[in-house]
Structure formats: C-alpha cells, structure tokens
Length: 428
Ligand SMILES: [Zn+2]
Ligand SMILES: [Zn+2]
Image 1 (tube, rainbow, N blue to C red):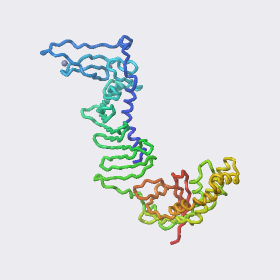
Image 2: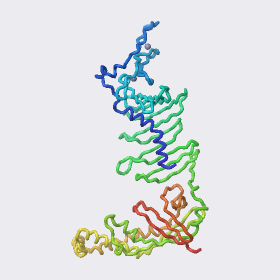
Image 3: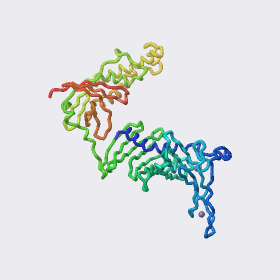
Image 4: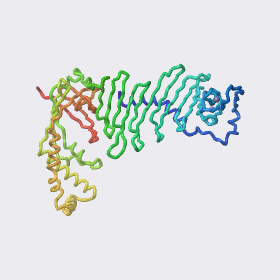
C-alpha cells in the first residue's frame, strides 16, 4: 500500500476521534454565574420520591451519567440522584458539562469528556431520538499526563462491541513521542517509530503496516523522509522478496547491451555551480562519459561508466577556473583584477590554485564514474526502475523504446535536475 493510502485510511479511522476532540475543546465549561439565566429556566429537577430504606445508608453520588435527554448520578447502591434534563447553552449542558450538537439533518450528538478534554463517551441520536451509535473512550495517562493508551469502542446498537481501535504511545525523556502502535479490534495495523536526526529533531524512522493475514511491511526512512527500504515479511517473519515486479514479457525489449554518451560537463557544472550562477554554454569545456548497460533476462543489470581521466581533469579545472572568474565578474572585477587580488592573498594565480587542488578531486570522481554497478530493473507504467536490489525503493525514469534506441529521463534528486539519456543497442 502506498504511504498516502495508509495515511488516508488512518485519517478516516481518526476522524471520529478528531471530531470528538474538536467538539470537547474549549467551550465545555459552564458559567457558574449564569445559573439564574434563561438557560436554567428549562431545568426541571425530577426529584425521586423518598423511599424507605431498610438500613441506614448515606448515598454517595458518582460521576455524571448521560443519555441524549438527561443527566444523573448513581450511588453504588443503584440509587439515581440529581436526575435532570440537559440545560444546553452554547452547545454545552450547564449541569453535566456534556457537549451537545444538533446537526442540520436533525440528528444529535452528545459527548462526555475527561478532565483533559478527551471524549470518554459519545452518543449519536437520529431525528426521532433513537440511539444510533455509542462510542466509549478509555484514555490511560502516565504520571506526566501524557496519553499511554487510548481505546475507542463503538457499539452501534447491539449488545457486543462492533469495533474498537487503540493507540498506544511511548515517549522520550523530553516528552516527544518515541513510538505509536495502532490496532483495530485487537489486531495491530500500523506502528510508527521516531528517531532523532543530527540536528536533534524527531523524524519518522520506521513504519510497520500489518495485514489481516499476518503479513507485515516494514518501511524505513532516512532523516529527509526518503524511503530507505520497504520489505514485506510473511506470517512467520520471513522476508518476502519484492521480485514480482519484473515482468519478462514487458522487459524483453531491453534484453542485451546498450550504450549512451553523457555530456558530463553539464552535470559537473550543475554540481559545482550554484543555481544563480549560470555559466554560459560556451565556457563549459566538453567532457563525455560512455555508459554501457547490460540488461539481463533474469531482471538484473550491469552498468559501467567510462571517462577519459585527462579529459575529466582538464574539464574540472576549466570549469573551476571559469566559475571563480564568473563570481568575480559578478562582484564587478575583471579577470586580471581577480587574479591580482588572488595572488596577493595566496601567492598563486586562480588557475595555479585550481590546478594544485585538481588531482585529488578528479581522481575521486574518476573512480566513482568508472565503477561497475550491478542491480535489478523492471518496467512499470512506462517507467524504468533500476535499483540495488528488490527492496530498495527508487524513483523510475520516463522510458521510451523504439527498436534499437531508447530514451530515459531520470530525476536526480541530489542535483535537483532531470538527466536525459539516449541509449543505442549494441549489436551482439
Ligand atoms: Zn446509595
Ligand atoms: Zn446535562
């Protein structure tokens, strides 16, 4: 299931809880000075006739009990006390503090909340005054007043609870949520775990979604909310490989060896130059990478890049030099003035300085480009996906194949650009 779908489902499940929270928030307190106001005019205390009691007993009324019409208190002996019709003012009963909302369609909802404002009881009545839904909330707090567990149970009519959902929480010492576990009717359905990033902020590091058949999916995230891995586990906890996405029939257009030439100077300039500094095209020295990809019939691929070491080095040097001159020009300096200033500071010209630093950077890049990489691939929805393994989640590239040529547009999130490739098939 996609993340958005899971979020939607959770939101749906949480809608009622949210409705209750909103309804219970704020205006639930009655005004003690208003007891003589017009709202109390409709109060009619139904005093229970005194009955003779066999034993001396002083009634001890418990908390308010409610239904759609009345509130009352119960003594442990069963005695009904303080029974009265709700006196509603500003959507709240001035007697028992229940929240009352008359909906436009004639239905009515009434909520009872705990001291923290969370609903412990919700009753819905139809236009004829029949109870159509009862929901109870059991909220357990820790000593710091944080919610450890909230359980909502719905009784739509019958004697037995029809559905319940529970959320349990644990907390870091600083009060932030560490994890949340949600279950429905006693079955787990969604866990979320948080971690701390290098800046000390909390982020979602792991999510587990459970299916009714016992299969679960664990998704791990990095601190940028990018999915690191998404792995299914069967009912015995054994990893299920996600290899089913490889469709041999769909992928057969790719079987074989393909070559592409990539203008690496453009990529280089995009990595090295900040966005607002656009280097004119004629100032970027050429630099090409030969890319070879072998798409195998088993769903795996082998990719190699080849770049000329000298061409890469000189391209990087030219680009760096031009970049520095460009920023100097933006400051209003000529090239000569820039060199003069630079020499005064470092004893070197701009080019000399860049040359002295170039070897290390070029060597690192050269090794990265010339590295072989192996992985798996599949085509879905006219997109080509290439990943390290079946459990790595990658973005697909727009893919168009006709005969011995295919084009591929791949988003590069690190550079924030789209890379276009044209691949040509190599005759076997
Ligand atoms: Zn009693
Ligand atoms: Zn009331």
